[in-house]
Image 1 (tube, helix red, strand yellow):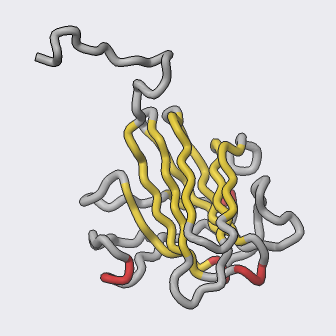
Image 2 (image 1 turned 45 degrees about the vertical axis):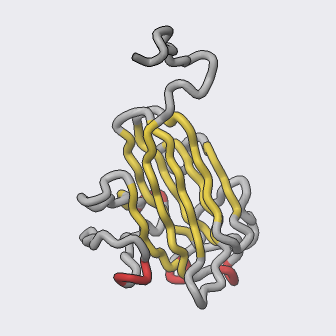
Length: 173
C-alpha cells in the first residue's frame, strides 16, 4: 500500500511522509508524487531498518551500508534532481545513486556521497524510460533516517550549441 501526501513546504510542518522503501532490487518500490505537486516529492526513509543489498561506485563495498531501492518512470526527456539531508538526531551518511533499470545490471549514471552533509545531484537530459534510485548509507554504523527530495525538471533545450533557440531579429516584437 502506498502512502498518501499532504502538500507542505517543510517536512517538519506535517511530520515526515514515509515513502514505502524497497528492500532490494527485486522489491524496488515506485516513487509516489502527490497530485498537488506531480513533479516533486519529499519523503523520509529509515535506512537503519533495512539491509545491505547493493552498492554504488562511490559507496563502501565492505561497509555494509543499508539501502532503499526505488523505481522512477520518466515519460519524456527530463532532468532529475535528487537531494538528501539527515533530519535532527540522525547519524545517517547518505549515498545516492541512479541507475538505468534493470537494477542490478543497468548502467550507473550518477553516484553521490553526501559525506554526512545535505547534498544533491542533477542528472541532465534523461531519456524516457525506467530508472532505479538507491538511497544507501556509507557504512552500517552511519545508517538511520534520511530526508529525500526527488524533482523531475523540464529539460532546457538550448543549453548547448547543438540545440540553440532562434533569436528574434526584430527586437522581440
